[in-house]
Image 1 (cartoon, rainbow, N blue to C red):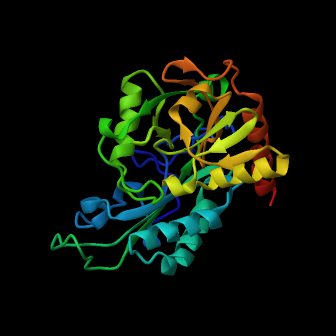
Image 2: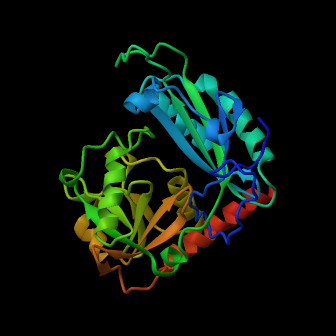
Image 3: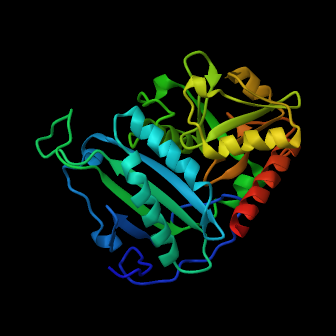
Length: 318
């Protein structure tokens, strides 16, 4: 189908233009879609009810953003997609070339002047006999591209209001480092936080250590050093997390990967979160109490956010 920028009712439209902070985005109604490399009208972009992603959450995904119309660290996201596929026995490697080609085609087809969000999803395929073990067809892969819109500016000005959530409060999670489509626990944690007047949730493991949020990694500034939970603890190996650790090294900031107790998080000088869509976002309150002395963003958070913006600008310039 044509490369129209199609809204929720199918009418061609130009995306709304919004001021974008570093990585600050939300979904809107306009989107370009391709299924197995074939462009589809969003209203007709469907998969089978027998698709294992729909039936069992048997799929993996990635979210990428652009700067200056260039996908930001796409290779790192594709490598993580491959690793997630390996973890569930899904051969993603053979699909990466057509996926990357389709990403380029959809980004080129999107209206000029807008930065974009790209969502990639690969399912194991169809199981018309409802066989839990095996798919009866090839994998299904989807690429969706849409405009970026900003998160509320309050998040960057005042910081996120986080609620700590323990496993017994929600359903069990799939291993967090796998970008699985089974996101029920993440959805429930976010809903719980919002229902209680917070912006998002922070997971606390059974040992009393904070780990990550539903869609982001956590960092703490403790006694002048930057600390983030280790990958060995099962947190998602975030692409932006890795970039921020690299920035710490290049800026000469002491940093380490180690467990962070809830008590340490509560007495941290600064807290911030990182993700593809958020960039570096400060935390203003944890369980209703101000973080540190209440300065948002704190000096270390601001320095790292500036560093990430420089990397984004360099990527946009090519």
